[in-house]
Length: 141
Image (cartoon, rainbow, N blue to C red):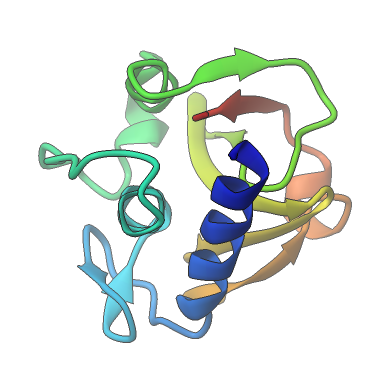
């Protein structure tokens, strides 16, 4: 059962590819950020209920050290040791805290809403700016 649910998450994440990056957007094809992408994909795949997200400034992670993202994930997923499985969540340190997440397709291959690329795209966690950052993993199943 979990394998089917994991496959459903990965399949749904792929349908969000090329969605423009938009802070707090939640509309496939129109806009999403890394947090709203997770909320929508896991809801549409039937893994999590609808999650109402409170407002968060786009640069909150640069000014505060509190682990808002990681603490929020712990309400819906448990932290796990690597290596992550398909449909697990990877969470990287950006700024002063862990503040960028992606859906694992097949580690280190990910789908994420990448602000610099300005869209939801494929990524490789061993390349570019992700390779040098601390990362944590979460299992929502």
